[in-house]
Length: 242
Image (cartoon, rainbow, N blue to C red):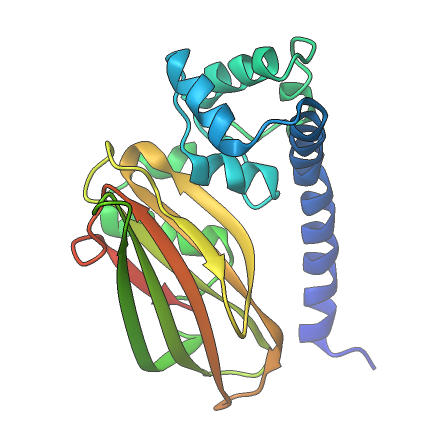
């Protein structure tokens, strides 16, 4: 006899797999074009800024790796410029985006800060209160590039509050919309999942995938690094959730 909970998860898994396949069309097209032109992300960032269509290196990296999609109207202009820089036909990149890419997160922009955080986590299908407890946190900050960038390394021990926990999420925010969003890299005990970017509001949510599902009460150690540009991580909003 099929477990009702298992039966519910199967369609969810299939839906997520289909959505991931659609989302990856854009990252594949972007990565292929970058490789063909032999351009680095740093070079593309500089050319976009010179053209008056700035996109941060962190954002480009998330797009290239399929961790995030353009979700703002301002990204349309940047993508059009990207197509010119990468010598692509007009519409080559935009045609590879899911049909709802530019409207997917728009309702969140009109919410209060606390409501946007909750909505971000709900969009990732994460319960910030009922899935995980944090037993230990240690963060170390390293200053780079003449105090223009900081790398924060976070190590945590999280404990599952129910069986089957296989991912956690972190919400990050800058001091203001003029600051670049950070670049997050997974360390030990997790892999980087989806990234939701509300850049003009200085807010993002990052999904961290665990190597295997946990049972209720089981602890798990994970680590990740966050590279901040122009933002003091001690002043930035940051919260962990399951």
